[in-house]
Image (tube, rainbow, N blue to C red; front, side):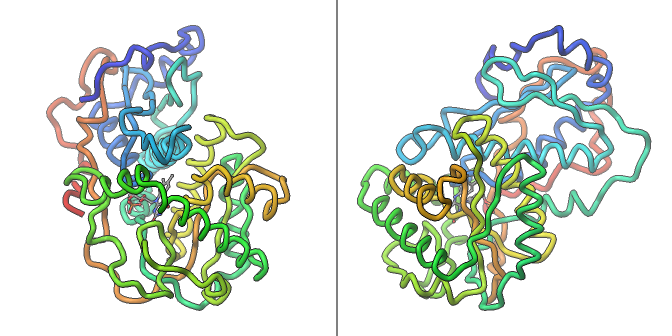
Length: 364
Ligand SMILES: Cc1cc2nc3c(=O)[nH]c(=O)nc-3n(C[C@H](O)[C@H](O)[C@H](O)COP(=O)(O)O)c2cc1C
């Protein structure tokens, strides 16, 4: 269990009063199940940098700063984006299990606070739950079949529903320019011994977090999807314009914690929609991670229209899928603290949820 943090309880009760009835009818087994589903979200290096607390009325999400990548993510941008993705997963899971979801003011030190209320009876949205369970980072190479413009538009529209600007990079000139920027970011990261060591530490980190080496591309096929986990491969920038994948830039007018949280929600929503359409998604984070490259990206490719928060490659993966498709997750008990029970009782005490907790994804 995470170390208790009073901040997680520090919400303005006057606002919360409106939601006491709404938030009080969630069996703890459902709270655990929902948090388990939320934790299937993507996170930078699979650090899973989140903490949840249920007080009997609302579910609070806070960042776990002890899991921040201090060298590559000093401002907590990627940490907060990861938490935003988990928040979006939670809300989708809650709706799928038949809850109305509303936000209440989070309070100090809390990223978001969610109140859940049983909706009028409806079937469990199994397809949405299956989507949450099947999403993953598929680092196979992308094929040459281009992602159709209308699909890119649909993915950008999904991001917009979370209040995030999204732009697909499609013109050959822009794709080559982006590739050159990405190369520069990778080279700069590669020259930084501390960042390199930090990244290495999260490969085969444990059976609960980090990225199993078996999930990373092993052979230096120059057509393999670009990824931070392919050092020593010098990309020919022209290759970017020859594959069918496209990069979508997610961003906004400001560069702060709220904007990053929204970017994470948009990342989750976009990723799930791409998964539903059979597309692969790989975040391409270094151009955002390196300050000078991020600034140049904003100035040149985005013409200062908005600040980039995350970049994702989207395409049709080809080649044999690695049998181990999932990265591991920390047990729910490690990230969820329960400080109060609905109506002062554990509604389905000792009972297993009839839908079961998400399958443990130990060992990748
Ligand atoms: C903010 C963020 C940044 C990420 N950056 C990269 C990246 O640069 N390269 C990459 O291959 N994967 C990246 N990922 C994917 C994570 O490595 C992946 O989500 C994590 O290992 C969990 O695995 P899963 O997505 O298969 O569940 C990123 C994910 C997030 C949320």
